[in-house]
Image (cartoon, rainbow, N blue to C red; front, side):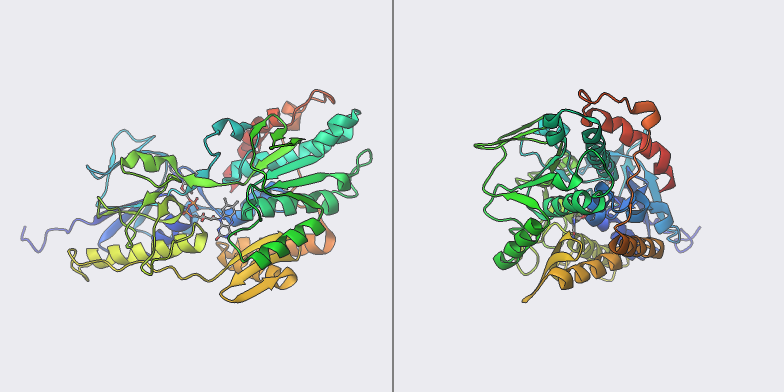
Length: 458
Ligand SMILES: Cc1cc2nc3c(=O)[nH]c(=O)nc-3n(C[C@H](O)[C@H](O)[C@H](O)COP(=O)(O)OP(=O)(O)OC[C@H]3O[C@@H](n4cnc5c(N)ncnc54)[C@H](O)[C@@H]3O)c2cc1C
């Protein structure tokens, strides 16, 4: 066999995580000289910005998620493995997977494993105050919320009823604000006429923020506007109130203890714990510091993109942990790797720096209520909400989801419809014990059952 006949070994690019970053990389990277292996522990890509709608019964799971395989089915050079990454051996260029005996070797590695909730050194709080990061989290929260109303209806003890009809949301960032607003609408608008022994409109929703204003990443004028819109929805806002401790149905603040049937956590995130397996120094939020080209200092062929990475871009601006940044970083890395594999640039050359194109930020508060900041342009209320709706629909993957979500929203907007308020698995798990029942004790089991029932259909 002559040298020319010898097949060229394709470079292997292993991509960890099929979130916004990993998926964008796989969709954008095109070169016949490479094969991609994409690994995710879930079988679906999740549109996290709309998770709060699933958690508060506005949308159902398939409307914000899609199987990774079906998104990438036409990309013949991409192999999808549903497996959990348990280790990264950077020195030997290998990834360790839970279900595979042999480590997986790579020429290039793209780490897009995202972030997880940060409980500021109090992991024990998570059991009482679930955060919102996955579909499982959203289902757990939804079951908890809906069961609290059901149990308030059957209890005869006014104290228990008051507790069940109190929702505490911790963290005044975009996730906390969205959750508080959506909970207020669920209680005061959607469930308003559905109960006979309780008045859902009397539900107390408390948003707790440690700093002196909510949505602190926005212009102060817009965060004041968001506060006004939330108060209009009936949300109580407590500022300068760092949480001291959380236990079962109880949040302790400096001078106040709140009894709440539902406690939700939206106060912070940190990098995926797998980042620690790289054996390099991480930032204070557990994220991987990368150079301006998104590669690791010590390992030129390993890149970190999206929420797991921390960097200042080519203009010296810190890159925020939002989905457009994750997608733009993935696009940038796809170009770098393609150019190197196809010898369009010399591997020894300095790589181009990533520059974040900030198109603005927005946060939704409720129906027709939002704020948006795009450069000098500031939008409030209905116009901001329409902008938010438009942007989120554009980003939703696949026409089917877009059409469904739009129809669902239009339907609930005009009819205050029932959304996705079905609680499943009651035959096996629901025991009516009016005074002793704690919804949180059953939600894991219920969530598992819902996943069994509907998860495979996602
Ligand atoms: C509730 C909520 C609301 C948000 N709202 C907005 C918004 O309005 N606008 C906005 O721009 N951004 C928003 N964000 C942030 C945005 O979702 C993130 O910036 C974006 O998802 C980051 O993309 P990523 O690819 O880095 O990580 P992710 O999208 O988190 O993807 C990480 C992937 O890695 C997989 N994974 C993790 N660990 C493992 C493992 N050990 N093995 C295998 N696979 C693993 C996960 O299953 C997941 O698919 C929101 C986030 C949340 C949680």
